[in-house]
Image (cartoon, rainbow, N blue to C red; front, side, top):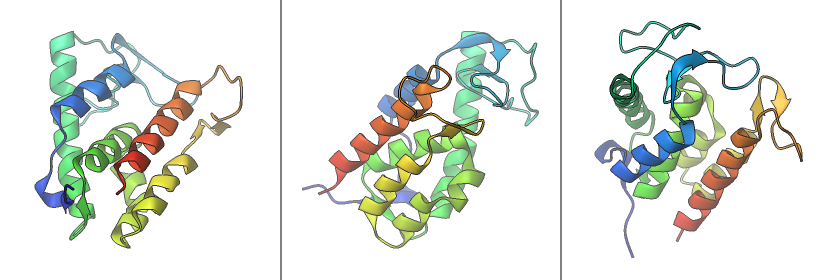
Length: 168
């Protein structure tokens, strides 16, 4: 059986990076992906490499979008690893929580019950806490038949399933 590795020693796998890009989808013009969300461009980027927020009307190319996504992930990964001192994770756990951080941001991660569960060594509770994040723009995306933000809930369900399957 594989052992968990300190989060400080891990980085996002190539497979997870590609999956994240697929989940985010690509747009060459800034859009608001769900009601009351921030404008995004490329592969869900809300900020440019310079740190400036994306504004409606901003455009990108596929290559610039990849660079922007990698720059964003690199910054968030450093903060993510610092947020979990002495916490060990399986690669699958690291990847899915980094995917979550890319979507919700490091500020939300630092306040999350997932982080608290991991710090307490309660990996199952951390997995289950993923299901608490089902809102977008104040709307419950888990509402059956919703057309507003169903992808938000679908993504959480997939993360939860992956998280549970990673548990020994």
